[in-house]
Image (cartoon, rainbow, N blue to C red; front, side, top):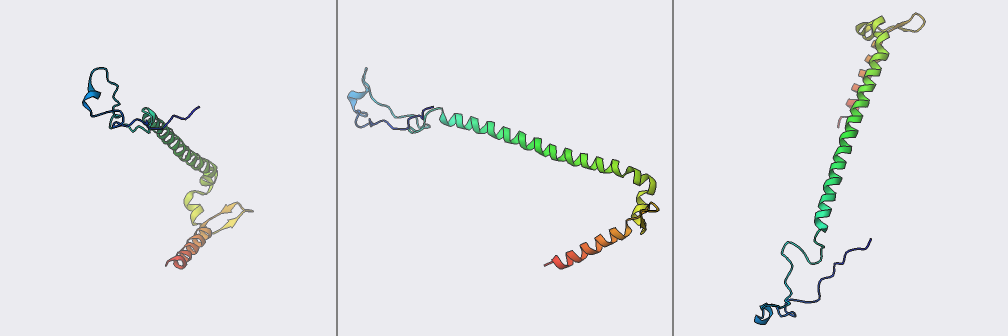
Length: 134
């Protein structure tokens, strides 16, 4: 693929006789200036093609971002469902309140409680916030 030429014409309006009465007659070959909205150094369709390409790239980026955001929330929902389904047998046997309020943890007798762990987590988090507070 060859690059478009960006060279300006060597003929200036003064050199071509622009502005003289004899240059505007019938059959004259006067050089006219390019339209004001186009630079002589930029090919005519180049800006439009670049803008069109940018719009396509923006749409692809927007679609990809939406897809991956949806994917992240779908995976999060799948994790929550998996945790709930895995916890159902324990919730049916001990109940949520019985598990959270009991201090006993004895795998031999199949009695489990999380009060000590919950209390320890809250205390260490509180201490960490006191230390980390500026």
